Image 1 (cartoon, helix red, strand yellow):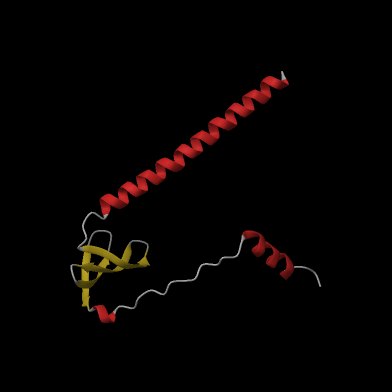
Image 2: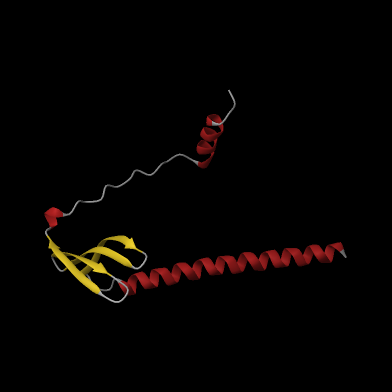
Length: 115
């Protein structure tokens, strides 16, 4: 009876891993599909978004060669001002840490080690 129980456990585990992998790949496919469909035009681009409340956002968008700041609310969109390209600050790329998980854990261990 234990061999039968073990076989059932392994079967359920394999099915779980297959469903998990299938979910992962379907989610990636849908995300890539929406990205392609959503960005089909090249004349409108959202440059930056800042949330000012749960349902209100300030956005900087590029429409053609013009930059415009807008407020997006639940039921309305309001234009704030037009911006020139000189007024925009380019985002600074953060350097990604190349430290491995083991190195990070070793540093934490050393930091909290009793002296």
